[in-house]
Image (cartoon, rainbow, N blue to C red; front, side):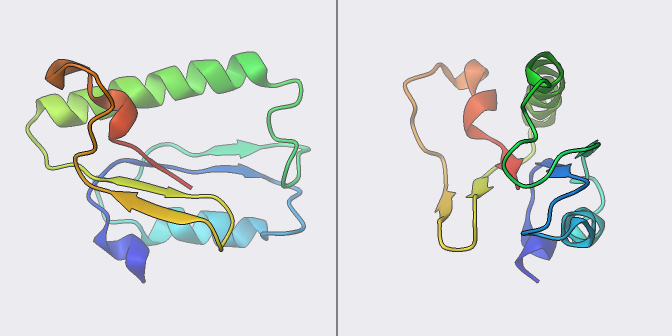
Length: 115
């Protein structure tokens, strides 16, 4: 239910063969995100829970760069942003307007929702 309250672009990266967090849950998160916050997901073929980047490093960098460009545009449009990160169910963090020592125009790295 919390996913319905996000106000940032959501980028879901999920291994199609994930046996710890079933694929349908990743797809469900994206589907439940508000319209306008659903960024193109990366469903990683042939990968599970902890191996999505193995052999996919260049693709990850390409996709993350595109996502951060999208977030930058989102910010430049004057939309309010928060950080929502989640990695495993016991390590949740929500930060608003955190200062990471960057110029206001370079805030893309602090304004992401990655699940």
